[in-house]
Each structure stands twice: as structure tokens, then as C-alpha cells.
Image (cartoon, rainbow over all chains, first blue to last red; front, side, top):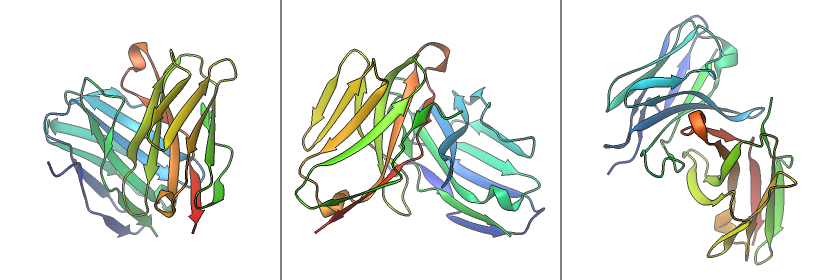
Length: 114
Length: 114
């Protein structure tokens, strides 16, 4: 298995622009998670899905952030409009219902908003 | 509200010696704890875990200790190797409706010198 795939790996954009991050989870995994990593706050859970349904979005910073999972093999995290404080590394992770404590992370998308 | 805290941002150790990484938590509902390891430009990878019904779990050079009364856990690496140099994240899970959700600490940068 190729593992969790994220694209793009790097994104540089200007303030006010829309940013879309993409994730393909490991095939057969029931859970999908979006995290943000910053120096100050470490790894923060933004939202997670179970069987394509959002379960907990309490970590989404504000309405500028939205996430979708239209099918079991694809999810997006969108920021519109982007701001410089959104600059961070965004990770996607997936896990199985059994052993779901063990989450498998993608390589991350490094976002820089100028 | 940081429910999982890693108070040491960094740790430097000589090769062959013991590395001890610490983690404190505040939520008494946490029942499962994990350590993840992260290399630059990669996503975190699962290292070792422990259930709240145990106070120790060992896997090769890695041992995790849990002190529930103190709400403290630690990761011991013996002997430390240069390849262990990475960021280490402590994570915790609460049971019940939060079953799929992990809360991470800020991370500790471990540097093992040859």
C-alpha cells in the first residue's frame, strides 16, 4: 500500500486566496483525520471523519476552514480566504476501526500564506 | 487548553545513554496513550502505546511508563542512537464518544550526538 497520500506537498499563496489541500487515505481505513502542526501548538486535530461522515469538527479554527469527504478514498481541506496565520504544516491521517488508536499519517502539506 | 503537555521543547543526549521524554496530561478520561516519532519532511509514525490498565510497556529499546495518579507518562530509549534524533509527540485518547480522537502534545525535539 502506498500509505496516506497528500497533495500538494508545498503550497505558497497570497493572503485572500483559496487553498485546497487533498488527501487519499489508506484503502480500507474507516477514519480520516486532518491535523495542523505549528511550533506553538504542536499537532492540533482540526476535524475527523468516520465512514465519510464528519464526527468532530470542533478543532476547525473558524468558518474560513471547511473539509469534505465525498467518498472513502478522497478528502479535501479548504481555506477561503487564506491568511498568513494559516501558515503551517497540514497532515492527513487514517486508521482502521479496529486499532484506530494507531493513525497513519501522510507526509503533510507545508502551506505558506504571504 | 492544552490537555497534553510536553514541557521540554528539546533534549540532547549522547549516543549510548538513556533518553527520557516526558508528558503530562490533565484529562482524567484519557485511557490510552501513544508516542509518535517524526522525522523532518515526513508525517509522524507510531512508536509505542500503553493502556491505562498498565503502568509499563516495552518494545525493544523503547519503554513507556504511565503514572496515572500523577497524570504523567514517559518514554525511555535505551541505548539512544543517532537515528533516534527526531521530534517525539505524546498523544492520548479518551474513551466513549471521543473514541476516534487523539490529543497530541507540542512535541519534544530529541538530538542524539554520536
